[in-house]
Length: 515
Ligand SMILES: Cc1cc2nc3c(=O)[nH]c(=O)nc-3n(C[C@H](O)[C@H](O)[C@H](O)COP(=O)(O)OP(=O)(O)OC[C@H]3O[C@@H](n4cnc5c(N)ncnc54)[C@H](O)[C@@H]3O)c2cc1C
View 1 (cartoon, rainbow, N blue to C red):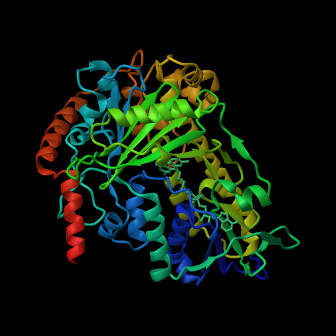
View 2: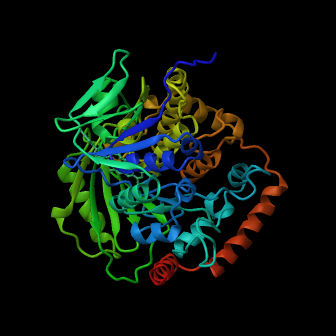
View 3: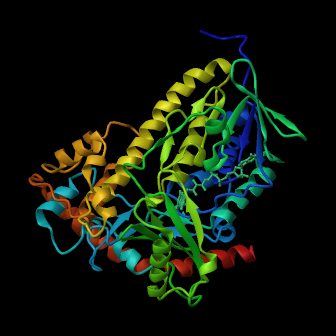
C-alpha cells in the first residue's frame, strides 16, 4: 500500500554530541541513500553537559566506518592519539594464578571454515593455547607488533585490528569532520523542553531561546536518556542480576619512557570484585577498575587500581586526584525506537566495558538507521518494530557472551565471584549452550542470526581460553593438523616481517606531519 499523503522524513535532529551523536551524524550524513534524499542532519549538544569520554577500545568494524565517512587513517591515528588493537588478553579470569592468561584475538582461527579447530585442540591439548595454535595473535602481541606494514594501504590489515583511542579526541575529530565535510549543522543549546504533536511524535526540541523542529529525532544524550527515558518513559531492562558491575574508576597514566612498547591488546585482569582494563595509546595508557557496588566499596576499588598501577613497570606514578569515578546501570531498552525517536549509544543501553561492545553497537545502530531511513511518517511504526526486535536480540546476545566470561571461571575467592559465576543467573540460551557444549564443540548451527554480534570464533576463544573441554569433542579431521602447521609458518613470517606498534605509529605520525 502506498501512502501518498504521508509527510516525508526530510530532517533528522540528533540530541547529544558524544561518540554516539557524532558517529551517528557522520554515518547518516555520508550514506549515499541519505544524501540522495537530501535529508538535513542537525546535531544539538549542550554547552553545560560534557561527554562521557571513556570509550577507548573499538572493534575492527571501526575501520570500515571511518573509511566510509571519509576520514583517512593517518588523521585518526594522529588526532585521536590512536593505536592498533588486535584483541584482548585476559589475565586471572580462570583462576587467581599469575600464569593464567589467554587471548581473544580479532583474527579468525586458521581453517575454521574447513575443519573444527576446537575439536583438534580438545583432542590434543598440547602445550600451546588454542589462540596460539590457530592464530598468529599471541606471538604478535607478546612482541608488541603492529598489524600491518608501513606500505599497507589505509585501513587494510595484515592481521585484523581495531583501535585504542582517546575518546574525547575521537569525538572532537568526528565533530570537526561532520561540520567541515559532511554538512552536519551543529547547534549548541541545552534542551529543556520536548514539544510533541497530537500523535505523540516529537515536534521539536527547545529552550527559552530557540526551538529546533525535526521529522526524526535521535536520542544520543547518554545515560540521562532525555528523550527515550525521560520523555517517553521507556525503562531500562536492568541486567544487574546477571552482570552486576555498575562502577568504574578510571585514570590516565604516562609511560615511564617514550620508547615503551605499545601493547597490541586491551589487557583485562580480573580482581576479587571485578576486573581492570589497561589500554595502551601512543602517549599514555588508560587504566580502569571495573567493579560491582553490591560487593565492593569505592575505597577497595581505588586500592585495587593503585596496586595494579604500582606493579605496572611501564607507567610513571599517577596522582590519585586524577582518578575519575563512573557509575552506570547495566541494561538496555527493549524499545529503543518509539514514535519518531530512536535511542543510540548510552541512552539505548550499556552493559559494562568488557569486550568493548558499546561503540560497535553505535556503529551498527546508526548504519541500520542510515540503510533504512524511513521515507515518510507512515513507515515509522513498521520500521520501529523491525528495528526493536533486531536490537533486542543483539543486546541479549551480548549479555550471554559477557556472562560466558564469568560462568566459566573457577574463581571462588570472593562473594562477587561466587555470585557472578553462578549459572543460575545466566539466560536459558546460555545454559542450553553450556549443556550442549559439554558434549560437543560449538558450531555455526548453534547461532541463528545472520549477523551475530560475537561470531562462533569468539566463543571458541573464550571457551578454550577458560579451559572448557567438551567430554566427547568428536574426531578432528587431518585438515586441522595441516592448519596448525600453516599457522605456525604464518606466525613466524609475520613476526619477522611486521614492525613494532610504536615504530609504525611514529612512522605514520611523522609522514602525516610532513604531508
Ligand atoms: C567505564 C566505561 C568504559 C567504557 N569503555 C568502552 C570501551 O572500551 N569501548 C566501547 O565501545 N565503549 C566503552 N564504553 C561506552 C562508551 O563510553 C559510550 O558508549 C560512549 O561514550 C557513548 O556515549 P554517548 O555519546 O551515548 O553519551 P555521552 O558521551 O554522555 O554524550 C551525551 C551528549 O548528550 C548531550 N546532552 C545531554 N543532555 C542534554 C540536553 N539537555 N540538551 C542538549 N544536549 C544534551 C551532552 O552535551 C553530550 O554531548 C565505556 C563506558 C564506561 C562507563
